[in-house]
Length: 154
Image (cartoon, rainbow, N blue to C red; front, side, top):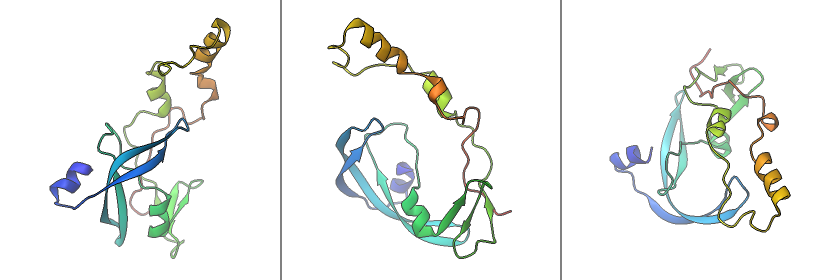
């Protein structure tokens, strides 16, 4: 997405962001921001995009701030969405994307500790820590399901 924005000549502002990583660690990083008009089902929403230039292989995510400003309501139980001001006109989540599920991604990765982690543990807690690092039985039941994206109306 970043390359598309650059090719279209969009202007970016440099900034430093405080971020919380998936493992709970706090970090700061360089980021670029820009605002883009996103069109969805004939409506336009000015949306702030945050680009992490050093990140590799990341995907574009539209978060709850976008859902709120666009007035989108997700009906997960019925696998559809609608605009808050027109709840009778529902849109299906869309077709399945060909992306590996989180289980497939995680099962192909080995469990590695960061440098220095586990060094002060005795052999029993150390092996217990390593074996509990990957436990598929504790994962959600989304195994085998594909991710979906917002699609056209019913």
